[in-house]
Image (tube, rainbow, N blue to C red):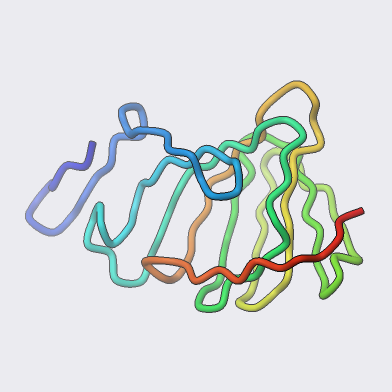
Length: 134
């Protein structure tokens, strides 16, 4: 539920906002977007990554991405062939520049990982890639 506070400031109640399926298999809760709040340059979500799930290898054409890990761990693979990887834990921050090839996954077999994600564009343009994953 989004509420207009003073004619310009919008607040989305995270306790009441719906969870929606995301193209990657994650669950996504929209907080700030062009549609919800009229944002012109910011997009913010909360995402749940199910146990064992991995996004498709991809990059974002039009935006930077910042993530805060609410519940980890997650594994970030990156590089043109996903040749690098880093394990990210609860409380860590991640920054992904535009056009950086990456893939996030939840290595847990038991519990969801959860992130808060922010981009500097009201909508993302994603280029998915067909890269074999390790």
